[in-house]
Length: 200
Image (cartoon, rainbow, N blue to C red; front, side, top):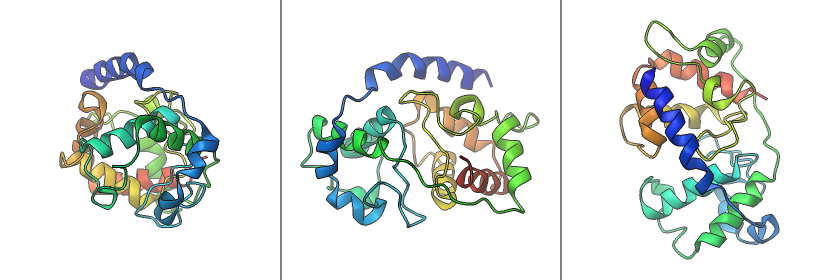
């Protein structure tokens, strides 16, 4: 828990530098290729590709920069960002952030378990409440460090938690998500991912 709190402070201090200053109109013109996987407005119909609509602009910019640099390896994105400069990436982030996310539905059998993890965590294993960083409605906390989760595909969220758990994904501030995911079991991951999909 101490690591999470320290990580939050570090992330909050660093996040102001990552805030994007993009132009949504310019960004829309650059997202033709993105639409194939993420949808024209960022609401992906494919569960293994994340919804980008409504995501925080600063967070999207950080992820785009991390993917382009290789800090966050995403096989499907290899080479796709090579022709874009930082302003282009800022504009793309601004465009997707300006659109509303379309939420899905949570599995009724997992709602209670998912809600418990999201709202209170698991004190016995040291898993903090997701809403401490991502907010009660899953909209994030207005920084590049703590993204919006509301409405995200269950399959994508679960896959990212697994990647944090295995250290395949390591671009989270101070290793916060790696530390949390490592303490979660498969059922908790599935339940909270399902709950997030229906969160709005």
